[in-house]
Length: 409
Figure 1 (cartoon, rainbow, N blue to C red):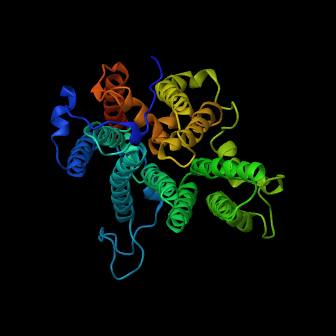
Figure 2 (figure 1 turned 120 degrees about the horizontal axis):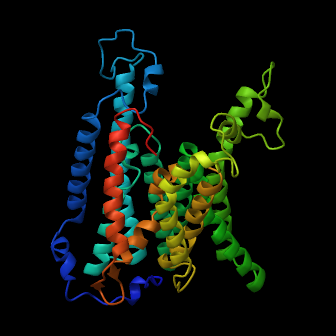
Figure 3 (figure 1 turned 30 degrees about the horizontal axis):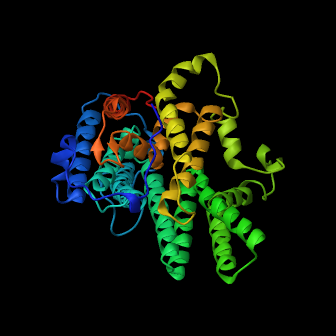
């Protein structure tokens, strides 16, 4: 299939005749309401699937939490004190649902920044991209007390703010631009603390720092470029702190006190992340490449293929200027591509079906394979149709496994 070339929003002409295939969707005058209805309908379906399964469920780690002094109390105590595992799990489930819902809305707004929202076709792209995130292959992991939904929310909101900073830069609103850049850095740092792959989003800052440094070297420094470079560097340091701070706290806890030191304390670059991954999970570079894991590589193959293909698609996209929202496609291509490579070489490869949920490029790639931006007309896209059917089937099967104490990917 030939690469789909995104077109900058300013080059699009208003749509006078909605695509017949999506005419019903385009008559929805409130996309947020429609997304909300779709979100909760999907969640109810997943809940029924998981609840109807026999067994104790996939993750029983909450049983390790101490029960409340009064085991009969299952609600969260308003008067203080310990809470039981049921309350802890319920808080985690609610938090995951809220974070997933907000990440759907964040992706909708991010898509509007990238593709525009002046025409019916642009609205459709934003709507379908957000809708795909609802049925993400992360499935039940976006509902259970896991980090995927929180990382998705933080990542999408961070990307939205960063793309909004480019719009502010183009409009000359430098103070607003800097506030958005630094706020996005804080969100990326928080995402990194939840899951270490969140640090990949720091590439946005490295990309802009390189462009600004080259501009200063070739054209000479100006107050504008110097201040912007300083803000970008500060933002990049904030993102990196999301990795450094937990490492520092772990080093103080396990490597400074007297007694037997953990083996990773004596590494040239002490890393509790690397130690946990290698010692407890037995992964590392090509460490997962065994014959027994071939089925897991096959399970991850479709998502890896989509991630790689959409990364290449974004790298080929035209960009009118470094400050245009469309240039975000290039900025977002590298973090997603690195994620795919790291999953293939150094992770439990099957978790790519979960952690890919927080990266927007592949949603856009699937949607734009079915909607022609330049002609405002639908196209026959087996890729999108196959992806939707596969994600729905995979999420439902995963829900059965999740609810039956079997290890879903």
